[in-house]
Image (cartoon, rainbow, N blue to C red; front, side, top):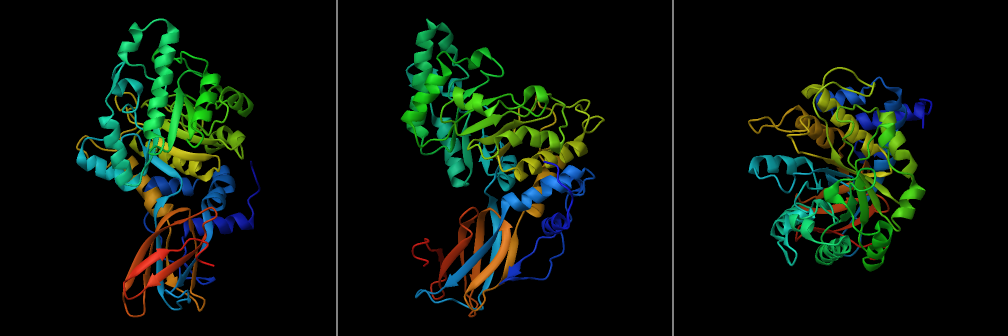
Amino acid sequence: MKKPLSTTLIILFALLVWPTAIRGEAPAAAVASPGYHPAVTSFFGSKDPFVHQVVLPNIEANRKSNAVLKVVDGKGNPLAGAAVSARLKRHEFLFGHCDLATEKDPKRRALLNEIFHFTCPGNVTKWRAFAKKPDRNDFSKVDAVLDFCREHDAAFEWHFLSGYHPAWLEGVTPDTEKARYQIENARNVLRRYGDRVQFFQVVNEDWLTHIDRAKVFTDQTAWFSELRKEFPGVQLGVCDCWSFNPEGRLPGLDTLKTRYPGIDFISMHAHKPRQLWASPRDMYETYDPYLDSGIKIHLTEFGIILGEITGGYRAGTWNEDNLAEYFVQAMTTAFSHRAVRVFNLWSNYEKFTGNPLFTEAGEPNEKYRAIKSLLQEKLTTRASGSTDETGRFSFRGFHGAYDVAVTFPSGRKAQVQAEIGGAATELTLAADEEAAILKVLPPTDAQ
């Protein structure tokens, strides 16, 4: 992956550090850079050549596109000279926290909701959490968190269909009967939530690791294959304690695809060794084998336990400042890699003592402020300008959901949310000045 530092990469790095807005085809005047959190400044100014030669250029290449917004009136005629603004609201890449939808404190939940839009919760979707008896499931808490996610436009990953086992399963014999309950639980969940949950972990901690309460009582390959056939439109994956150290890296693709036919994603805990500071190169070496494989990587339980830093990339003792630096590094490096789709922070604070984002008084700590600065100040797009004679406004921005506003010559304003990224980089917006309405036209209507 190592490449020589070229003039082109320097230009791309400059674009990343100094966000620009573009009017027509010409760049607008540069906007003064905000004061980023020191952890953000430290990573983007890193002395590690790998960061500048690989990570930062890949953000530009993989997570941004040139976008064109064409504004037309009700008759399809272009609107020239209209003031347009586009502000990134939510990344296409999924940044999350396991407590996003389950945090009980209203203030902390609101603060989490300010910066995250994905959750893989710690316990609420485990089998034992809702299976009170063999013939009775209580999904009320699951329904509540999914209602929160729908209300706040947050994606959700189910953790996990095969366990942890409810207490009553221990008394069930033989194992074939345990398997019957396990298989039926997965079907019940997928039938109930298949159209409301974006991702389902089928198995967790029964491949790399073998946890008794996560044991699968049937043939995993046959079971996964059956679920794949029965639920073809659902995203199915597996999870385990894979990490960045050579001993805990992700499994080989051929082995993974053979073991789980039709798998869509693989979720890695990314929290062992507990005090590891992995380098960006270590992270890329973990992700690279999955490039263009059709299988996305999710980091779902990222965490650190306080103590002496291990791994050799950095040294010392974990503290709030260097934790903020590492969290920024890990999130940014994952974001830059095409094979990665999700980065989710774990809580379980009694164990992962380096993970809290709030002080004992409930206020944001350095890690929270660093993540907020990264996502809302550094990795963001705020573009503004005017449409040209063809009604077009062009800019380069991150992939995601945008709040787009058009101000008409009369001073009236209309707004709409639009998704930009992948194939959807040229959008036509139909504007009704009298009603102050703006809508995104389907591609067929935009011709």
